[in-house]
Length: 427
Image 1 (tube, rainbow, N blue to C red):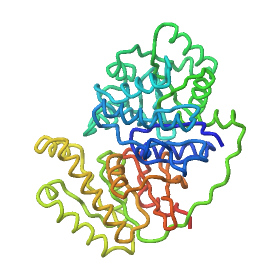
Image 2 (cartoon, rainbow, N blue to C red):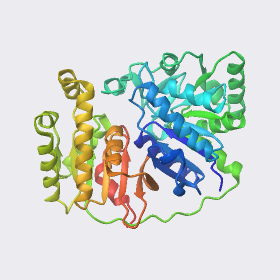
Image 3 (cartoon, one colour):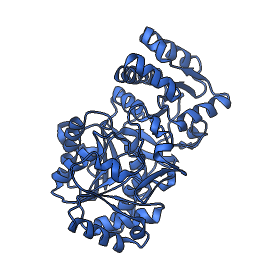
Image 4 (spheres, helix red, strand yellow):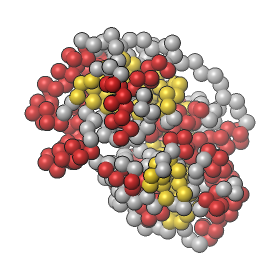
């Protein structure tokens, strides 16, 4: 099999989301966590049709995000990737300093392109683009709760404006009037924008048919790079699968038994609701508080692990998730970076201790939490398993005694996610 699609993702949960979408679209997909050693893809990726490299670049300085993204892109291109896809969150998480614009500019230069598309829409999770404005459900992005994000507050729903503040190049719009008429009309809009000197274009999309048409237009137009959320990744995969004329092979997933745990660091509305649902159903909760971590981090970690060990007969939840106003107060008093690092490192150590103590089934909620914990566990390759909710699959580590991991974006999942996910593992 040839490598049809190579993707650079800016966080671990988003990479998992994309890998799940690609597998469901029929592409044999391998997820790599972190930059490949020696800048070459490992043997586990050699027979893949799609490879997703998960980085932790969403909130780092833009120059560092560019450096890491270019290194990952070069590894994918060296392996023969036919198309490059830059994957970011369906809520376009970034600041005016980046990182979506700077990384996209660098990747476009790397592939020798002069134009690319931006489409974070993910209709299955109620992320839709209309007239360049991003909606989360029925609310504009800037009124969806994302305006309170502790690292990347999104206060403007107009993505043409948002991207325009991150790049020196002209940003246009492929409006829904063209998208609704299909791939040929989208190609015509792309050609007009290119002729007018635009380098970037936000693309409207409100349903799955729109994403399929955008993917077909981008590939037929021979764009070497596209960018977006996992929804557009699915649109690209569908066209690539048809073009390759290959049938996806059935995959058998391992059966993982043993204690189960949930570690949550996200303060998104969705995750807070999932915590409330879990505890209302009688699930045990250990709350990791910032004040306690500041006073005695090692003591809190030891206490959490001892608490979990005494309840190993049922799924347990360890959460540092707090309402945005409480998080903001901690950040004002102690500094944003210090508080963020404190929570991430503590949850990563707790996760490591849980696995060392026998936990085999694990949900990690929140992008920063997931990436820090997976890095602490030293996991480099994941195979994609069954979907729990749109954008969130079970994944499995390689080897004879696999871990089952669900890396959940803070904004994703139904209210009952924490109570229903373990029942969706292979029995």
